[in-house]
Amino acid sequence: MAYFEDIKIGDRREMGSFTFTAENIKAFAAKFDPQPFHLDEEAGRKSVFGGLAASGWHVAAANMKLLVASFRREAEEAIARGEKPVVSGPSPGFRELKWLRPVLAGDTLSYASEVIAKRTLDSRPEWGLASFMNTGTNQRGELAFSFIAQGFMLRRSADKG
Amino acid sequence: MAYFEDIKIGDRREMGSFTFTAENIKAFAAKFDPQPFHLDEEAGRKSVFGGLAASGWHVAAANMKLLVASFRREAEEAIARGEKPVVSGPSPGFRELKWLRPVLAGDTLSYASEVIAKRTLDSRPEWGLASFMNTGTNQRGELAFSFIAQGFMLRRSADKG
Image (cartoon, rainbow over all chains, first blue to last red):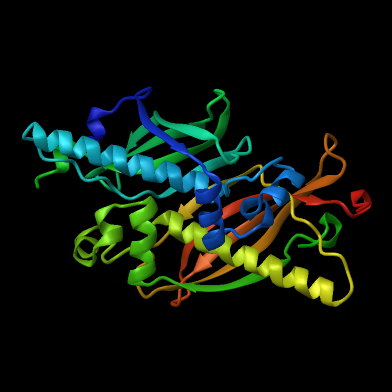
């Protein structure tokens, strides 16, 4: 994480990749989205997805997992440089979640996040609000998942901690 | 699930409720969103959430879990009436995900889904596209979570199965 002042529109964060396996697809689906095409290869093949397909919420949760790991690496790097890691703020919401292509067993998505907007808030002088286009691209280079995330970020001027 | 022709704007589905416990909040967070305020009571209390807070993706996944259970009950009822259950279609995406209030350990959200728009598609005559306002309301009657879901629904005229 960085302070609000430290990011600029166009900044891009590569968050790494996640491989969806039959095993992790079925385990997530059994807990949160037990539809046949997420649980059974044959049902998946017969569905509009054409194969055992990851739940859209699994695709989104994998994005979050990589984002947090990416924050953690940055915090550790900051500490190693003798700096204080910046605490991330809450999110007021996300927009335009799109599952553009099926994510099937064996697919690997590479996730990235790009700053697309930022603004200060009169009502909350200690925070800025930034918007990010988050994407998941499969091993064939096809965009499979995207959404616009918004997050509050501490302003450097306000962080007296 | 119903056919596209069988739903109308304003139709509301109560999907039941889900209680977020310290245990299930931490289990989800450890897997997909390992931020301190989702993993540790003390870190939660010191955060903007004011307590051990569920990951936003956990709040969303619980919604999906109840939606699928609700579909399943309806399918079983259809079969009990001697009817063929209707297969649900894929979703092209969701809009306006909002986490309006923290969901803390001990909170129970009641989820509902209301039809807010529907239209036919020239490009896909076998499907209609419906939009739903999905909400999660806590035990104090406060709206904590909402998003607009879109889903393709089979048209009765197209289902020759």
